[in-house]
Image (cartoon, rainbow, N blue to C red; front, side, top):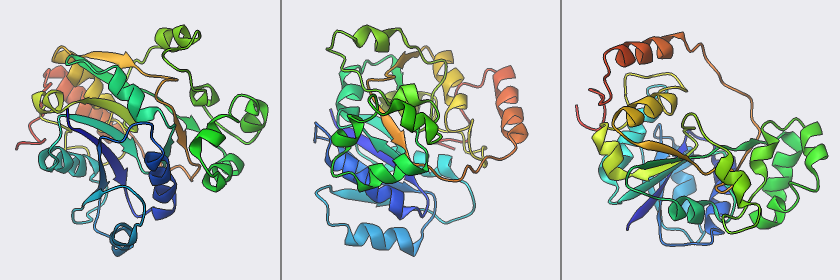
Amino acid sequence: MKVALIISVYKNIIDLDVVLKSVEQQSVSDFITVISEDGDSTIMADYVNYYSGKLALTHLTQEDKGWQKNKALNNAIRKIDADYFIFIDGDCVLHPNFIKNHLKFTKENRILAGKRIKLGTEYSQKLRDSKTVLDFSKTILPEIFSIKKDGAKFYEEGIYISPNSAFSFIGYIRKMSQIKGCNFSCYKSALEKINGFNEDYVLPAIGEDIDLTWRFEGMGYQLFSVRNFAVQYHLHHKENWTDQSVNIAIMKENQKLKRYVTLNGIKK
């Protein structure tokens, strides 16, 4: 099975550098690493061209016309020769067993979904300075009160649990009600069945995750949680939330029509 890790980015090469170091430290290595850029900046092009790590990077770009992440992701689905896709964001650092555990739970009818701990400023810098992600991950539980004091959100999501450990039942009972766009995976065939991401969404959130949830479920797929198994550490940055009323209106209209297969996706 050919596996592709799709990393969504926009100009932020500082955080991407940390993310790629965590990808280099994965406990499995048989996957393609794709930089899916919602734009065509010289900053990102130079970074990829001069990247000297051990990964073979594929860099996909498009004209920068504002937020068009869904278009960039559909482009990746079309162009990348892979059977299975794992989606993350360029500011979400991966635990060494992140990819391994996504692949452990794959099934044709499953959409795997996880979460991430949102680190505060101090611990984001500690992660940037850490020699290995594994070293950093070992500090999460012993320093949990300091991490919370630093302003971390969803701190419990940063605690790694091995699927083979005596505590694995904790991960198995923690469910997901919806997809998070920064941490999910599925077969390419599932994405093709719903015609990929809906490009009618031109504002962040909902279109890249919540919209996928009901569409996948409407086509018979089951959401399967990998919380605490596929752990991510989100690096702190200023939030860039926008009014979601436009996105909500688009989704509600499609839900009313039971339009599980988008008209504006991989195929037009």
